Image 1 (tube, helix red, strand yellow):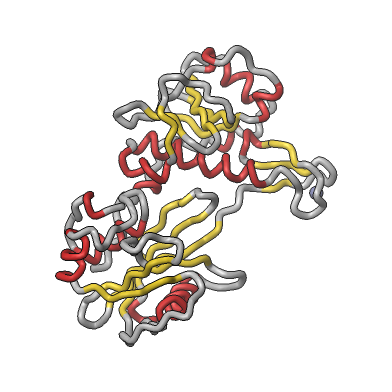
Image 2 (cartoon, protein in one colour):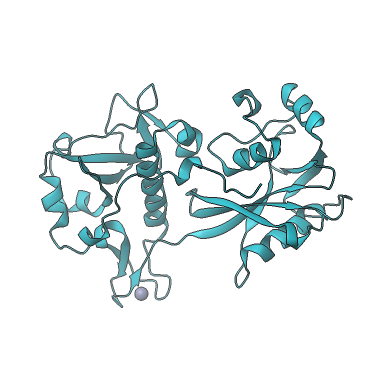
Length: 306
Ligand SMILES: [Zn+2]
C-alpha cells in the first residue's frame, strides 16, 4: 500500500484564502458592509455550533458597530463564490443559541467548508493570543495583514503565524502487530500511536526514528518509513506529519519521561481490547485514529474511541 490517507478531518479546506485582500488598507470596512459577509465568532478558543454540528455564522449586522477595538480582533479567513468569511475573537458569549465546543472534539463531524474555517480560525486565534509581544525586543505587536501578521510597534518588523511540525507514526513489527503507547497523564485504557515534536535542526524522518526509540526502545527500519499525509492540529500550533514504519526489533523498554506504557497489539488482541474498553483510541478528528485505521485495514466502530 502506498497511497496517502485521504481526507484527514482537519486537512479539509474549501475557501480561497484570498491573500491579495489582506494588504488592502480598507479591507475590513469594505467587507464589513457587504451583505454576503459571514462572521465566525471564536469565544475563548471555542467555536459555536448548532445541535446538529453546523458552524454558526452570523452577519456583521449582528454586532452593534465596528469599533476600533473590535476591528483589532477580526481576521480574514477567505472567500467563496457566495461569501466572504471573517473570524471575530472574543471572550464574551455573543450567540445565545450556540453550543461552544472545541474543534478537537467535533472536527470529524463538521462539513468540509465548516472545518476549514474553524481550523484556520482556531490556529490564528491561538497565535494571536500568544504573540502579543515581539520575541526579539519585547515591545507590543499590532495586528496587520488582515490578521495574518503582527507588526512590532518599535522595530516595525513583521511576525507571521508559526506552525510547529510534529511527527506521528504507526509502527508495526514483522508479524503485523501495532505498537501503541500510553502517556503518563492518560487513563489506563488510553493508547495511541507514538508522536513527538521535530527538534531544532532535525528532519521529520530523523524525528520518527529518534522518538520511537526514546519512547519504546524499538528500532525501526528506515527503508520502511512511509509518509501518509498531514493535518493541522491547532492546539495550539502543530502540524502533524503522519508516517508508518516497520520495526526491526520487538523488545520494549521505555525509560521515557512521557510514556507510562508501550505495548504491541496483534489484530485479535486489538479487537478484544477495544471491544472490552480496555483500549480506548483517540477520537476520529485525530490523525492517530486514521493511522491506526489504516493499519487495521477497514473502518473501525466509533465506539472504540474515548
Ligand atoms: Zn520588536
